[in-house]
Length: 600
Image 1 (cartoon, rainbow, N blue to C red):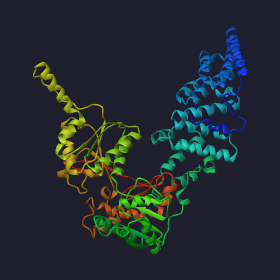
Image 2 (cartoon, one colour):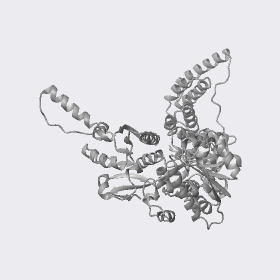
Image 3 (cartoon, helix red, strand yellow):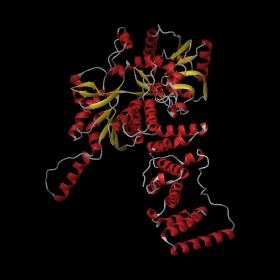
Image 4 (tube, rainbow, N blue to C red):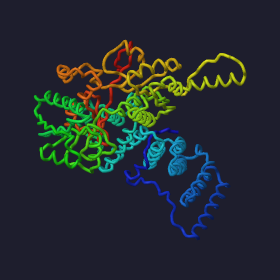
């Protein structure tokens, strides 16, 4: 018995000429033919009852095949269930297991299909056609059972048989899809196995390379390094269609950039800070071979996308950084396709061709915190966020991301600063233990001692809170016996300035923040420090947004076309989603002795 591993649908059926499985769909029969088949089935079963075990199995298989062709898979399964396949010759054993497996696959039951395939005879005893059919069944079973790495392995194993270029391309695309669905931890573990053959190891290293593209701005690309090392590998000869090298995608080079930001109104200060960041980065790049001209536009002068586009055309700009106002970004997102690229500095619910969206959203940080907790092995989370608009957005992002990654939200609570003690007691259910004790005292008349207890069904807390609230929250968590629960927080817990005396109560809280705050100052930050006194405040992060917006625009096409590509920025490690939204992956720190310490 060979426990082989695979997983994709009978995808290889169309790839392997001359090896297609017999159709399982019921043929069209007349009433007379149906009656004749039923009689034939009964006759076969009657003969089986009088025959030797091997002959009986052959007859039962014929009866089950007829029933399956008539659309009676359950009856067919009952007939096959009591056959002892271990005593049968390999070819008969294979045909019975194949039929049982196909019925499980038709019912979308990958787990049951794999249980049947566990009894498949040694493939060395089967002809090549049956080996290929066996691999098809394994592939589909692993696919249905959510085991993409095993699916990829079996497809890789079968790839040697494919000579036709179009079929090989289709197979490589399917292998790549399965590998891209494999988790990082599982992929790293597979890479360390000592018995990987050349084909498998090459594919695994290519999958790792696609996730490890170095900072795209440095033009170092692990995929190109892989191609140099694995020139003879089949995947190098026929690359998956959706895998590209960043260097093969042109940079966006434009002569004139429109900077569309508000200069009056409530967002004027924010607009000015972002503009300062853009101009700082622009001056820093003056020595490069291609430096565009900046054209500044006051976004408050334009009310509709049509007016913005018309102004861009009149100014002959080829790309716009902005707008900042959310309503204007939302209006632009309603277009199917914009006539020139926009790098908007806010987010909308929808997107449009040529519209890229980039900002400092609370949701980004909450998603990163939830991911960090999952990567640390946490699976049951309590969510604690302020009762405010940004707190509600953070709560939704926490919950959606943690759940999507396989975690469970045990409970969530929106707090008010004046009610923190009560709100946290409710979240941890310590108030319930006290209430039960009071009720029991009343019922029994006894004045006994009791020990308060917190809930035991959570292993982490996801927190969004400003420093003044977080300094109260952490001690209250400890008071209610939750001091041992790891806390993953958004950047709002840190003011941006080291204040160990005030932040001593934050000890143990882990939080994500931007490199602008946590890393040593970059050249751009030092340049701004010389002329601005607020770079270390939360407002100062807008400078970082402007710097990144200017440094980001040339690489937008590369980020979109190259899976795993990213750009190291002042606001985080930047990547691009399928919806053309910039995702920020933060640095992480933990409070120790009242000061943030980077977590490697």
